[in-house]
Image (cartoon, rainbow, N blue to C red; front, side):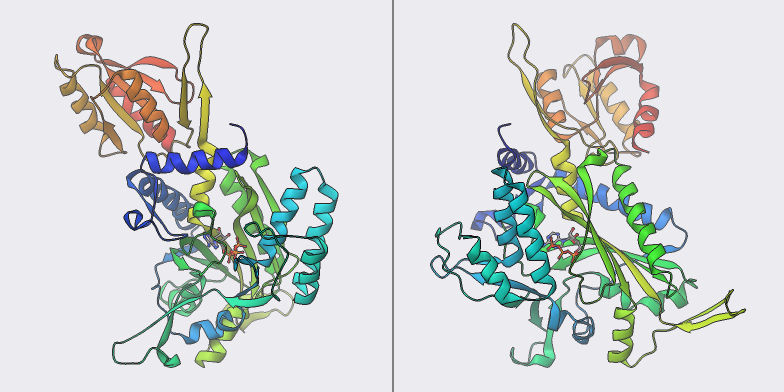
Length: 489
Ligand code: ATP
């Protein structure tokens, strides 16, 4: 593959061709930055969700999951700071009328400098940007763009407007009789799932009899009116988050922040993706609610980018909800504080958040798995596209392929299907040559194919083919279920 941009395009085409991801409402030419998951994509996405959900809730006795509504009382977003602060600095090019997020514009220029081996200049540019962003110095940022002659990709000019803030929340109205400009009836589509957890903190703590430290996990849709939205499912206007808020004693935040930072990286690496594909990026400019924050970045085909955020959110959110709702958000801790010899007593817990985009995780998994292989030999040209997905995430685990449609082979194949179907996702295919069927399963990321042939009728064995090595071996039919289950658990 010539370069990463070609590779990214190839992955996007592959996702469409094999039923992973389609542009939303494609027959009407699609909707920018909105995508639909097809029959294969929905399975892969569900497997990623389950893997996250189980590792959070099943493997931690002190973490429980909830499923809060997308619509929330509008005051939620005043309390959380999103109405006033959920803004990104934007700049417009006066000639092309194209709007850019300031950090993305500068980062794009830095990438270009790096590609031209001007790494030091790029690093200096990014460092200056971080400093100016941290101070909300918009004049300084505009000057940085002008001094570096950063131009618009469309018009090619440096004719920029001043930098302004834009709120990223979508809103709609509740009820049918009220006029749309009535601010009181304005409801937002949640821009993060976290607030659904905060407003339910006491409900869960009391009904679940949870003791600090404990966590609440949630998977759900979030919506942001992203301005720059040209990166496939990396940046969408409707996307899904997998978030966990971990409630802790005030003063223990450093220790728990480090714990979750390490724990989340371990989770990523448990999927078998090499460690060098990940790196931490500590935030210089902290969000209005955080006292420490970092990203776990992944090397996507578009470069190292944020995959997950780990934030020490202090008691900001619960305190704000206490103030706006006038309902106490306190927890009574009856453990003994060794410093005083008395119970810790009442406090508003601090929070460590882990927040990962499900769609970004999907992109990380599929882009790492995608491989174009040249299998040519001296006398034959050959190639294949294979998705080397971790077996536990693969949409289909086992393909059952009778060599021919007759001689009783489909009946044996059906026997295998009914034995395995209740345990994992299987797929039956009798069309096309066996070679073509293997290639199709490689492209879908199916880790195992079994071929039922005439020898099967004699000794009840089949050929099992391993996706990555393409090695084949003969195994008894009654071993199949165990082999597949062992590799996915
Ligand atoms: P970015 O800087 O890339 O916009 P962010 O810092 O705003 O991301 P957070 O608010 O920390 O993101 O959200 C947590 C996670 O949600 C991110 O790490 C990312 O995986 C995911 N996410 C955020 N915005 C989007 C989006 N527009 N499309 C897809 N996933 C997203």
